[in-house]
Image (cartoon, rainbow, N blue to C red; front, side, top):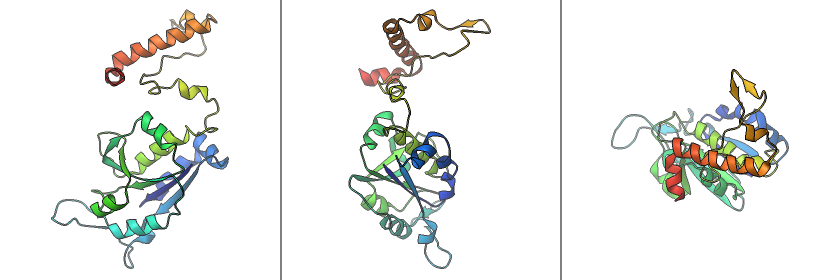
Amino acid sequence: MKFEVISLFPGYFHSVLQESLLSRAIKAGLVSVALHDLRPCGLGKHLVCDDIPYGGGGGMLLRVEPLVTCLESVSRVDKSRCILLSPQGKTLTQKKLNELREYHQLILVCGRYEGIDERFREKYIDEEISIGDYILNGGEAAAAVLIEGVARLIPGVVGNIKSLEDESFEQDLLQYPQYTRPPIFAGQKVPDILMSGDHRAISEWRKEKAKEITRIRRPDLLKVKE
C-alpha cells in the first residue's frame, strides 16, 4: 500500500510515522508513506499557495494551481484513489477503512484554512472523507488517522491477525470488556468465566457483552445492523 500525502505542513507527520506499528510496517516495506510539500509548488518568489475567496468572506483558500502541480508530480499506480480530507466528506468508518485497503495507492490531500478551490475538488478528487463533525486547523490529523486505520489492516502490520476480527465496529458492535492480571484489584474481580478455560462459554459471554455494551453506548450501531 502506498500513501501519498499532499500537505502545506508535511512536518506534521514526522513523529507519527516514526512510532509504533506504523514505523515498523514502513521499515518492513509493508506500506510506504511519501510526503509531498505543497509549498514549493506555490506561485511567485514567495511561493504563494492561498488567496482570498471570490465573493468575499473570512479566511483564505488553497489555490488550484499549486494543488494541481503537486498532484501531477505524484506517480500514479493501478488502483489509485485521490481523497480530500474535509469536514464536508462522509464520516470515516471501519467499513470504509476495509474498502480503502483494497487500493494500491491512496493520495491524501490535506485541506487548510477555509478549504480548497472548488475546481480542484470537481476535477481531481475521487471522494471526500471526514473523521467527525468538528473543525480542525487542517486535514493533516485526519490523514494520519486514515493512514493508521488502513495500514493496520494490511497483512503483516498487526502481529496477531485474530485481534483484528474481534475489534470494535468489525461486526457493527463495540468490543467486549477485557481483563488482564491481577485477578483481583482493589476488590474488583475478573469474571470467573474468563478464567474457566471453557473457550466456547467465553466466546458466548463475549458476544453477549459486546451486544450489551453496544446497546448502552452506541444503540445507533444496532439500528444500522437491523
